Length: 338
Ligand code: LMR
Image (cartoon, rainbow, N blue to C red; front, side):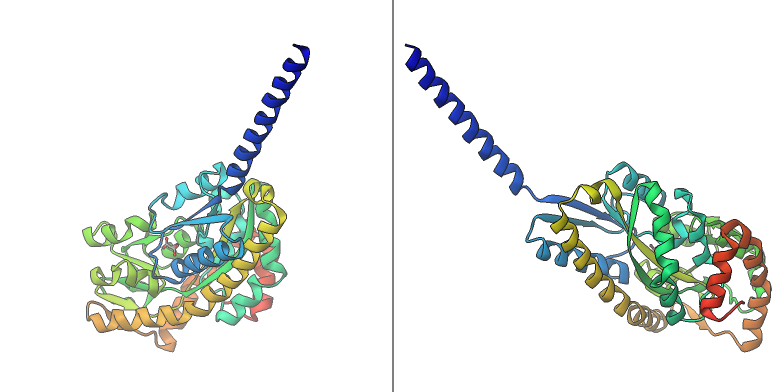
Protein backbone atom coordinates (compact mmCIF):
# COMPACT_ATOMS: atom_id res chain seq x y z
CA UNK A 1 0.00 0.00 0.00
CA UNK A 2 2.78 2.31 1.08
CA UNK A 3 4.74 1.24 -1.95
CA UNK A 4 1.71 1.84 -4.28
CA UNK A 5 1.21 5.23 -2.79
CA UNK A 6 4.85 6.06 -3.32
CA UNK A 7 4.67 4.88 -6.91
CA UNK A 8 1.56 6.90 -7.69
CA UNK A 9 3.15 9.95 -6.06
CA UNK A 10 6.22 9.52 -8.22
CA UNK A 11 4.08 9.14 -11.33
CA UNK A 12 2.12 12.23 -10.44
CA UNK A 13 5.32 14.12 -9.81
CA UNK A 14 6.83 12.94 -13.09
CA UNK A 15 3.78 13.98 -15.07
CA UNK A 16 3.78 17.32 -13.28
CA UNK A 17 7.42 17.89 -14.23
CA UNK A 18 6.82 16.78 -17.84
CA UNK A 19 3.80 19.05 -18.04
CA UNK A 20 5.61 22.07 -16.76
CA UNK A 21 8.61 21.40 -19.00
CA UNK A 22 6.30 21.22 -22.00
CA UNK A 23 4.57 24.40 -20.92
CA UNK A 24 7.97 26.00 -20.34
CA UNK A 25 9.19 25.13 -23.80
CA UNK A 26 5.93 26.37 -25.31
CA UNK A 27 6.51 29.66 -23.50
CA UNK A 28 10.13 29.70 -24.60
CA UNK A 29 9.05 29.30 -28.21
CA UNK A 30 6.76 32.31 -28.07
CA UNK A 31 8.62 35.16 -29.77
CA UNK A 32 9.20 38.36 -27.84
CA UNK A 33 7.07 41.04 -29.50
CA UNK A 34 8.67 44.45 -30.10
CA UNK A 35 6.19 47.11 -31.20
CA UNK A 36 7.82 49.91 -33.20
CA UNK A 37 5.41 52.81 -33.62
CA UNK A 38 5.95 55.90 -35.78
CA UNK A 39 3.94 58.71 -37.35
CA UNK A 40 5.10 58.91 -40.97
CA UNK A 41 4.30 56.97 -44.14
CA UNK A 42 6.01 53.61 -44.81
CA UNK A 43 7.59 55.03 -48.01
CA UNK A 44 9.73 57.64 -46.24
CA UNK A 45 13.32 57.29 -44.98
CA UNK A 46 12.06 56.57 -41.44
CA UNK A 47 9.34 54.19 -42.66
CA UNK A 48 11.84 52.27 -44.78
CA UNK A 49 14.43 52.25 -42.00
CA UNK A 50 11.88 50.77 -39.59
CA UNK A 51 10.98 48.05 -42.11
CA UNK A 52 14.65 47.23 -42.65
CA UNK A 53 15.15 46.98 -38.89
CA UNK A 54 12.18 44.59 -38.67
CA UNK A 55 13.62 42.28 -41.34
CA UNK A 56 17.13 42.28 -39.87
CA UNK A 57 15.99 41.95 -36.25
CA UNK A 58 13.85 38.93 -37.06
CA UNK A 59 16.66 37.39 -39.11
CA UNK A 60 19.44 37.96 -36.56
CA UNK A 61 17.34 36.75 -33.62
CA UNK A 62 16.17 33.76 -35.70
CA UNK A 63 12.58 34.72 -35.09
CA UNK A 64 12.93 34.91 -31.29
CA UNK A 65 11.99 38.59 -31.57
CA UNK A 66 9.00 39.57 -33.67
CA UNK A 67 8.98 43.24 -34.67
CA UNK A 68 5.62 44.84 -35.41
CA UNK A 69 5.98 48.16 -37.23
CA UNK A 70 3.00 50.51 -36.89
CA UNK A 71 3.42 53.50 -39.26
CA UNK A 72 1.26 56.59 -39.92
CA UNK A 73 0.21 57.21 -36.28
CA UNK A 74 -1.85 53.98 -36.49
CA UNK A 75 -1.28 53.38 -32.80
CA UNK A 76 -0.35 56.76 -31.33
CA UNK A 77 0.06 60.38 -32.35
CA UNK A 78 3.20 62.36 -31.53
CA UNK A 79 2.59 63.14 -27.89
CA UNK A 80 0.93 59.90 -26.90
CA UNK A 81 3.64 57.74 -28.38
CA UNK A 82 6.23 58.98 -25.87
CA UNK A 83 3.87 58.18 -23.00
CA UNK A 84 3.14 54.78 -24.53
CA UNK A 85 6.87 54.08 -24.68
CA UNK A 86 7.41 55.00 -21.06
CA UNK A 87 4.45 52.88 -19.97
CA UNK A 88 5.71 49.94 -22.04
CA UNK A 89 2.66 49.83 -24.36
CA UNK A 90 5.15 50.03 -27.25
CA UNK A 91 8.83 49.20 -27.05
CA UNK A 92 10.44 51.31 -29.79
CA UNK A 93 9.90 54.72 -31.43
CA UNK A 94 11.80 57.09 -33.69
CA UNK A 95 10.37 60.53 -32.85
CA UNK A 96 11.83 63.59 -34.45
CA UNK A 97 14.42 65.26 -32.23
CA UNK A 98 12.03 68.22 -31.99
CA UNK A 99 9.63 66.14 -29.92
CA UNK A 100 11.76 65.19 -26.94
CA UNK A 101 10.77 68.13 -24.74
CA UNK A 102 7.99 66.22 -22.87
CA UNK A 103 10.73 63.92 -21.57
CA UNK A 104 12.32 66.89 -19.84
CA UNK A 105 15.62 66.73 -21.71
CA UNK A 106 15.87 70.24 -23.11
CA UNK A 107 19.22 69.64 -24.76
CA UNK A 108 17.47 67.98 -27.70
CA UNK A 109 15.99 71.37 -28.60
CA UNK A 110 19.38 72.29 -30.00
CA UNK A 111 18.56 70.40 -33.21
CA UNK A 112 15.65 72.78 -33.92
CA UNK A 113 17.76 75.95 -33.90
CA UNK A 114 17.49 77.53 -37.35
CA UNK A 115 20.52 77.11 -39.61
CA UNK A 116 22.37 75.18 -36.87
CA UNK A 117 23.92 72.66 -39.29
CA UNK A 118 25.48 73.92 -42.52
CA UNK A 119 25.26 70.46 -44.08
CA UNK A 120 24.78 66.76 -43.38
CA UNK A 121 28.48 66.16 -42.71
CA UNK A 122 28.38 68.63 -39.81
CA UNK A 123 25.24 67.01 -38.46
CA UNK A 124 26.81 63.58 -38.68
CA UNK A 125 29.94 64.72 -36.78
CA UNK A 126 27.72 65.96 -33.97
CA UNK A 127 25.36 62.99 -33.58
CA UNK A 128 28.00 60.34 -34.15
CA UNK A 129 30.52 61.93 -31.79
CA UNK A 130 30.59 62.53 -28.03
CA UNK A 131 27.72 65.05 -28.18
CA UNK A 132 25.32 62.47 -29.61
CA UNK A 133 26.32 59.97 -26.92
CA UNK A 134 26.03 62.54 -24.10
CA UNK A 135 22.49 63.35 -25.23
CA UNK A 136 21.55 59.67 -25.20
CA UNK A 137 22.95 59.23 -21.69
CA UNK A 138 20.50 61.89 -20.47
CA UNK A 139 17.57 59.72 -21.56
CA UNK A 140 18.46 56.81 -19.30
CA UNK A 141 17.10 58.43 -16.15
CA UNK A 142 13.79 58.77 -18.04
CA UNK A 143 13.60 55.00 -18.58
CA UNK A 144 14.72 55.25 -22.19
CA UNK A 145 17.73 53.97 -24.13
CA UNK A 146 18.85 55.83 -27.26
CA UNK A 147 19.97 53.41 -29.94
CA UNK A 148 20.62 55.46 -33.08
CA UNK A 149 20.21 58.75 -34.88
CA UNK A 150 18.38 58.67 -38.21
CA UNK A 151 18.77 61.56 -40.59
CA UNK A 152 16.02 63.15 -42.67
CA UNK A 153 17.72 66.29 -43.92
CA UNK A 154 16.67 69.89 -44.12
CA UNK A 155 13.25 71.51 -44.20
CA UNK A 156 11.43 73.58 -46.79
CA UNK A 157 8.75 76.18 -46.04
CA UNK A 158 5.38 76.25 -47.75
CA UNK A 159 2.26 78.41 -47.89
CA UNK A 160 -0.28 79.71 -50.38
CA UNK A 161 1.87 82.75 -51.04
CA UNK A 162 5.57 82.92 -51.97
CA UNK A 163 7.85 83.04 -48.91
CA UNK A 164 11.01 84.80 -49.95
CA UNK A 165 11.59 87.50 -47.38
CA UNK A 166 10.88 87.33 -43.65
CA UNK A 167 8.10 89.92 -44.12
CA UNK A 168 6.24 87.43 -46.36
CA UNK A 169 5.48 85.38 -43.23
CA UNK A 170 3.60 88.20 -41.57
CA UNK A 171 0.42 86.92 -39.91
CA UNK A 172 0.57 83.42 -41.45
CA UNK A 173 -0.49 80.56 -39.20
CA UNK A 174 2.32 78.07 -39.63
CA UNK A 175 1.97 74.46 -38.52
CA UNK A 176 4.97 73.32 -36.52
CA UNK A 177 5.94 70.32 -34.42
CA UNK A 178 5.48 70.72 -30.67
CA UNK A 179 8.73 72.57 -30.01
CA UNK A 180 9.49 75.79 -28.14
CA UNK A 181 12.34 76.62 -30.51
CA UNK A 182 10.16 76.25 -33.59
CA UNK A 183 7.54 78.42 -31.94
CA UNK A 184 10.04 81.21 -31.41
CA UNK A 185 11.51 80.68 -34.89
CA UNK A 186 8.08 81.29 -36.46
CA UNK A 187 7.46 84.35 -34.30
CA UNK A 188 10.87 85.73 -35.28
CA UNK A 189 9.68 85.55 -38.89
CA UNK A 190 6.45 87.34 -38.04
CA UNK A 191 4.25 84.23 -38.33
CA UNK A 192 1.85 82.67 -35.83
CA UNK A 193 3.03 79.21 -34.78
CA UNK A 194 0.42 76.45 -34.68
CA UNK A 195 1.77 73.33 -32.96
CA UNK A 196 -0.13 70.23 -33.96
CA UNK A 197 0.33 66.52 -34.48
CA UNK A 198 1.86 65.44 -37.75
CA UNK A 199 -1.17 63.28 -38.53
CA UNK A 200 -3.43 66.36 -38.45
CA UNK A 201 -1.27 68.62 -40.61
CA UNK A 202 -2.61 67.86 -44.05
CA UNK A 203 -6.24 68.30 -42.97
CA UNK A 204 -5.39 71.59 -41.23
CA UNK A 205 -3.68 72.95 -44.35
CA UNK A 206 -6.49 71.78 -46.59
CA UNK A 207 -9.16 73.33 -44.39
CA UNK A 208 -7.19 76.57 -44.08
CA UNK A 209 -6.85 76.18 -40.29
CA UNK A 210 -3.12 76.45 -40.96
CA UNK A 211 -1.84 78.68 -43.78
CA UNK A 212 1.55 77.10 -44.16
CA UNK A 213 4.09 74.73 -42.73
CA UNK A 214 7.71 73.55 -42.73
CA UNK A 215 8.87 70.01 -43.27
CA UNK A 216 11.25 67.84 -45.22
CA UNK A 217 10.20 67.09 -48.80
CA UNK A 218 9.64 63.36 -48.18
CA UNK A 219 7.08 64.18 -45.47
CA UNK A 220 5.41 66.91 -47.55
CA UNK A 221 5.09 64.65 -50.55
CA UNK A 222 3.96 61.43 -48.84
CA UNK A 223 1.25 63.37 -46.94
CA UNK A 224 0.25 65.23 -50.13
CA UNK A 225 0.79 68.55 -48.35
CA UNK A 226 2.22 70.01 -51.57
CA UNK A 227 -1.23 69.59 -53.14
CA UNK A 228 -2.70 72.12 -50.73
CA UNK A 229 0.24 74.56 -50.66
CA UNK A 230 0.71 76.65 -53.78
CA UNK A 231 4.25 77.79 -52.93
CA UNK A 232 7.31 75.99 -51.55
CA UNK A 233 10.59 77.68 -50.65
CA UNK A 234 13.70 75.48 -50.74
CA UNK A 235 15.15 77.21 -47.72
CA UNK A 236 16.98 74.39 -45.86
CA UNK A 237 16.55 76.62 -42.82
CA UNK A 238 16.27 73.86 -40.23
CA UNK A 239 17.05 70.25 -39.59
CA UNK A 240 14.79 67.22 -39.15
CA UNK A 241 16.18 63.99 -37.76
CA UNK A 242 15.18 61.22 -35.38
CA UNK A 243 16.44 59.28 -32.43
CA UNK A 244 15.49 55.63 -32.32
CA UNK A 245 14.65 54.93 -28.70
CA UNK A 246 13.63 51.87 -26.73
CA UNK A 247 11.96 51.27 -23.38
CA UNK A 248 14.79 50.65 -20.93
CA UNK A 249 13.06 47.97 -18.82
CA UNK A 250 12.25 46.00 -21.95
CA UNK A 251 15.80 46.36 -23.23
CA UNK A 252 17.50 45.44 -19.96
CA UNK A 253 15.29 42.36 -19.52
CA UNK A 254 16.28 40.90 -22.90
CA UNK A 255 18.77 38.01 -22.91
CA UNK A 256 22.22 39.36 -23.81
CA UNK A 257 22.42 37.51 -27.13
CA UNK A 258 19.12 39.02 -28.29
CA UNK A 259 20.21 42.51 -27.28
CA UNK A 260 23.38 42.03 -29.28
CA UNK A 261 21.44 40.78 -32.32
CA UNK A 262 19.07 43.75 -32.10
CA UNK A 263 21.99 46.18 -31.85
CA UNK A 264 23.49 44.64 -34.97
CA UNK A 265 20.15 44.96 -36.78
CA UNK A 266 19.88 48.59 -35.64
CA UNK A 267 23.41 49.45 -36.80
CA UNK A 268 22.68 48.11 -40.26
CA UNK A 269 19.19 49.63 -40.45
CA UNK A 270 20.71 52.98 -39.44
CA UNK A 271 23.31 52.83 -42.21
CA UNK A 272 20.52 52.04 -44.64
CA UNK A 273 18.11 54.76 -43.41
CA UNK A 274 20.87 57.37 -43.45
CA UNK A 275 22.04 56.31 -46.89
CA UNK A 276 18.61 56.77 -48.51
CA UNK A 277 17.46 59.97 -46.78
CA UNK A 278 18.98 62.43 -49.21
CA UNK A 279 17.92 60.53 -52.31
CA UNK A 280 14.36 60.05 -50.99
CA UNK A 281 14.06 63.77 -50.33
CA UNK A 282 15.44 64.65 -53.75
CA UNK A 283 12.95 62.27 -55.37
CA UNK A 284 10.13 63.81 -53.35
CA UNK A 285 11.15 67.29 -54.51
CA UNK A 286 11.15 66.16 -58.14
CA UNK A 287 7.72 64.57 -57.75
CA UNK A 288 6.34 67.69 -56.05
CA UNK A 289 7.65 69.92 -58.80
CA UNK A 290 6.41 67.58 -61.54
CA UNK A 291 2.93 67.58 -59.98
CA UNK A 292 2.60 71.26 -60.86
CA UNK A 293 0.59 71.78 -57.66
CA UNK A 294 3.20 73.88 -55.89
CA UNK A 295 5.63 76.44 -57.26
CA UNK A 296 9.23 76.25 -56.07
CA UNK A 297 11.22 79.27 -54.90
CA UNK A 298 14.94 79.46 -54.22
CA UNK A 299 16.42 82.08 -51.90
CA UNK A 300 18.81 84.60 -53.42
CA UNK A 301 21.86 85.32 -51.27
CA UNK A 302 20.22 88.59 -50.11
CA UNK A 303 17.01 86.76 -49.16
CA UNK A 304 19.00 84.17 -47.28
CA UNK A 305 20.92 86.85 -45.43
CA UNK A 306 17.61 88.41 -44.40
CA UNK A 307 16.36 85.06 -43.03
CA UNK A 308 19.61 84.61 -41.13
CA UNK A 309 19.36 88.05 -39.65
CA UNK A 310 15.76 87.50 -38.55
CA UNK A 311 16.53 84.08 -37.08
CA UNK A 312 19.93 84.66 -35.48
CA UNK A 313 18.43 85.92 -32.18
CA UNK A 314 16.69 82.55 -31.69
CA UNK A 315 20.08 80.97 -30.92
CA UNK A 316 20.81 83.56 -28.27
CA UNK A 317 17.30 83.30 -26.79
CA UNK A 318 17.65 79.58 -26.32
CA UNK A 319 21.31 79.13 -25.49
CA UNK A 320 20.82 79.32 -21.73
CA UNK A 321 17.58 77.33 -21.69
CA UNK A 322 19.08 74.54 -23.78
CA UNK A 323 22.61 74.57 -22.35
CA UNK A 324 25.01 77.26 -23.49
CA UNK A 325 28.03 74.97 -23.46
CA UNK A 326 26.26 72.52 -25.74
CA UNK A 327 25.17 75.21 -28.21
CA UNK A 328 28.72 76.55 -28.30
CA UNK A 329 30.20 73.06 -28.69
CA UNK A 330 27.97 72.52 -31.72
CA UNK A 331 28.91 75.91 -33.16
CA UNK A 332 32.57 74.89 -32.78
CA UNK A 333 31.99 71.45 -34.30
CA UNK A 334 30.12 72.83 -37.31
CA UNK A 335 32.48 75.79 -37.65
CA UNK A 336 29.47 78.04 -37.96
CA UNK A 337 27.70 80.45 -35.69
CA UNK A 338 24.78 81.81 -37.69
C1 LMR B 1 6.52 66.31 -38.08
O1 LMR B 1 5.75 66.22 -37.11
O2 LMR B 1 6.43 67.17 -38.94
C2 LMR B 1 7.66 65.31 -38.20
O3 LMR B 1 8.27 65.18 -36.98
C3 LMR B 1 7.16 63.98 -38.63
C4 LMR B 1 8.27 62.96 -38.66
O4 LMR B 1 8.30 62.10 -37.80
O5 LMR B 1 9.09 63.06 -39.59
